[in-house]
Image (tube, rainbow, N blue to C red; front, top):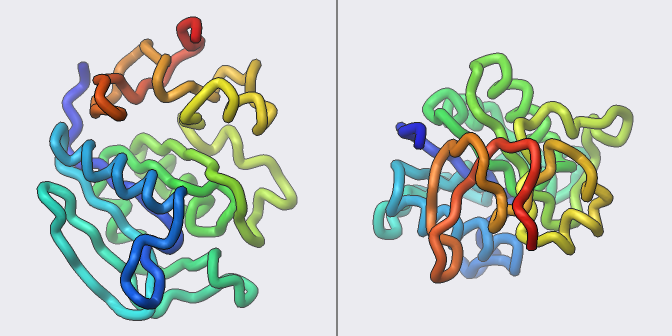
Length: 192
């Protein structure tokens, strides 16, 4: 297995104004990053009203304050300070494909020759992906299930992986639920 020096997770908005985790996709990203922090140095970056840092076990959480909201869309934040975070990471996992921050992260990671992955949890906002497909900008699309791959029309796509079943060319490992599994870049998933 390849040793990972730093993993970055990006989620558009982690907390509500009252300080609670916003919803299911946000909880998924947070828990994935929290568990991954047991395996490799991991940070989670999100956007909010004010700058904030917090450590949760081995996980470092950074909220980038006062981002620009693309076309006024609250769920589509971006800030220049995101690039400093991207430079620190060997592997980045974006938890929403169709937002400008993820597309910019994909371009930056490709230029930096760093791993870039994406999980689409639904939703999104205005992004370049409305005009051109950004699918190939990512090293892999990480789906939580075979059903997710089907819903997103990626059942036959070589870049789409079932997070629980993918097993080729390991990049980094972390527990999912009670089982240990691997993030991978692979050509084909194992059977369900």
